[in-house]
Image (tube, rainbow, N blue to C red; front, top):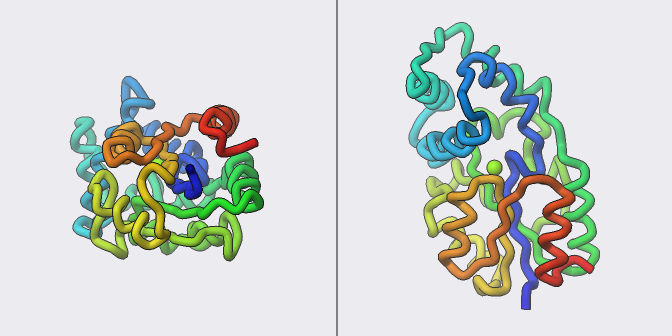
Length: 205
Ligand SMILES: [Mg+2]
């Protein structure tokens, strides 16, 4: 029986569309959806604490044939993140419903140190204190999605088996890793779709 729900943050609890705008306009990817998936994968070394945020952004731009000058780095992302950080309140409502139904709740987030220092970006700031039983931030651990170790650590800390868990993320590759471990993975698109998928799993009534 499912008793545990794990959430991703960026792109799920936290709406990143606005934060992403300046970078998107600069890079102009042909397919923004594909770009977002790749962006997340390219971010993994930074999320493991092995690369600085600025170096990560330079690498992303280079891959798309662009050069970011030092003084435009802040405008492209950091300033934008601070100004446009928007909580997905429909998702927060789902989390609160799940809490009322006594599910164990956790966060498995690929975090970048520089962004995590932006005030208000911690899951407890967004959803509330004493909601999540476990919060895993990759940059503090040195392990990040898609490494299976971060999922295993999350389950160990919350005392749940894979088949008792649901994992919600907006990156297909991470959902696939969860599935491969026996966790019920859900690819997040929007709150309405999430609500339906949780009902299909008989998690939400
Ligand atoms: Mg995400």
